[in-house]
Image 1 (cartoon, rainbow, N blue to C red):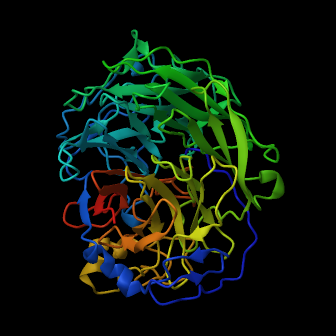
Image 2: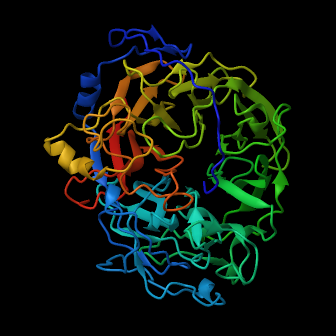
Length: 602
């Protein structure tokens, strides 16, 4: 997401979670049961080895460069590891370094004079090819300047089940916009990969802020629409970094263009019906929201039909999605999924700005006729939203909820699963609930995270495996930052963390609690009985302050590690792609890299 919405929530007293012996159902102060019980920090730390998790840092395996539309050389370094924008050195992706066709017509001073080095990789998505479970494609933001929040979307591709990621680069075709954002993709049933993209323009102000004016004298490239929802297809037989279908019938593959002030698209998502027995097989669903004011969001879907050769029919005109009563400001965060019978479901969230962001509303939109008409059903109306920025650090909260759909019926219906962040304790916890009657009723929420001490657990991401196993991955802060003088602290770059206006303790934050980050996963049966306890997915704890992109300006307080991260399953394994700044030997500058975690589904 490129838009930051200020969230003000009254502070709650910090209360301790009730601990219980591992494997014993326990209550929590969120009011939800921790079905698997809580576990000690030492047991959690050891679970990485016990569960035989494998880690691979994908984005250090290649060096990528591209010519950005707008150059921005301000550096915040050496604090927190920042190094500014750097000219390209050592590129080995074989991608086109630029300049590019979409940069023709740029105003004087644009694009940048030379290719620049990709350094950071925040926010991610991962998908598996239905024709080959060992073929995976991940995507993330591809930053050339963390200080300027300057990025395109990039991709990394594996053909050996995630062990190596030899093909990488930026997703081509939209370099004429300043930024591309919100990585998300989907395979069709023939193995063609669709990336849905949100390119947008801005110019840098003298102070390093972002000027989104729609003005031919201000925009970097006035020949392009200010913002668009667009698509790009990587054919099944693609092998090189540049092998993308960037146009449709000779023109940029735009789903919906927006070129007027006050009409700004955001948070696009995509799903494809890959079941050949579905009445709507091969239908593509592209969803997004349109902001017509700071807190006024309108959700839409456009549909098209995929073809075996990677082409598709023209996109339909945008279809407005319904919203339940009680969400007058509109809703965002659409996450479409397609059931085996062709039904389409998505969650939406309203964060209730008119009520001071006191309470979030999640509802379900569903279509039974291939996306032409929709119904809307409330799920939960009283979610206490966590603060916009987590305690002790400057990175912002991400998407409030995640959504999954089971491939096998339970009680005659395909199960729906919603996981979300709950801020009722003053910290963030992860909850989940299920519906076995298409959203008419829901189970009582259960708490996913099983930490014994109160810390922030956030950004849940749901996946449902082919056998119906439900897995929730999330970021986890139960383990302290590495202590001073340890090899782990040196590899984590803790000594670089010297400027953090959100932290009242001593810097560098050696041994700080509720500060550094891991990734975790919890698995359940289709009826949400736990399969074991939380498993640590990241072998090493990492510092979120290092090289964290600044979303507004180099001196602005807010930073970013992503609004979500990716999870997918195939052949009995779960794959996640999440951020790390740890140097296990390939990341000496402590840039934000994408860590692939592979674990057997219990």
